[in-house]
Image (cartoon, rainbow, N blue to C red; front, side, top):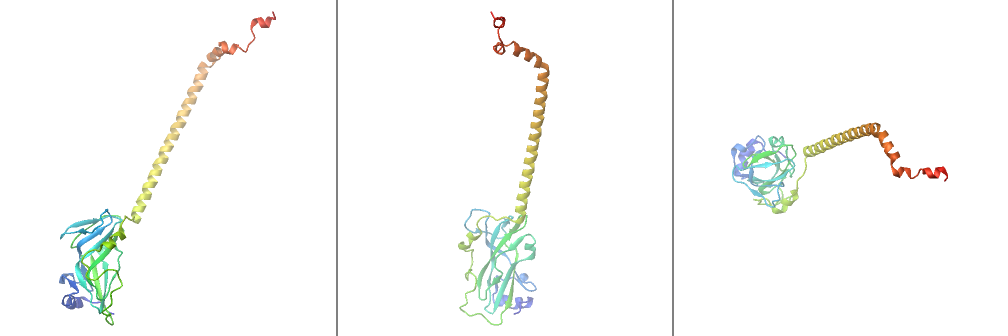
Length: 249
């Protein structure tokens, strides 16, 4: 098994229609750059269908979002070869990770679908035509049988994102950065609540202290007079014997 070098790509890539449309400037030292095509699908909205893109149209992949991307190019892998695909390093460094398969079966022909996940903390801005993928091809020691149908569920002749795979990325996921932000926000809210409760406690202690001081002052100032009023009150005298009862007459 040997991977194609630049000369193999230049000799066989165009003549065997391995990539269509062919772009000689997309040939790398050991691979070929593939571009974002005319269809994408993200899980940031309630839409159930892929989004169509015109040439150069931009789109954004937010943190925690999954993305399906259809390639601009159609590939045709010879039955004597096997392909390997991945997102380019410049794309990965932004936090966009390839979570789809990395192999293209011998004999496959059609567009490719990349499944990507934004595991980073920032929004990633892309557009149709960006060359963010690469494909490498290796020769096999012997060709696969003609009736070999591949090991994946992606059918030959693919030119659109199948509707049966869209529901697989429904719903939004959280990255480690978002979980950390949520925890920090919760910690700050708890801290603020504790500070508020501390202020309420201090205010209650202060209010109780002032009330106790005022009550003490009131008792000192008005205590004797209040005692006199209680003694002179008729209600307090009902329990004391009258003068006639004391005389015994």
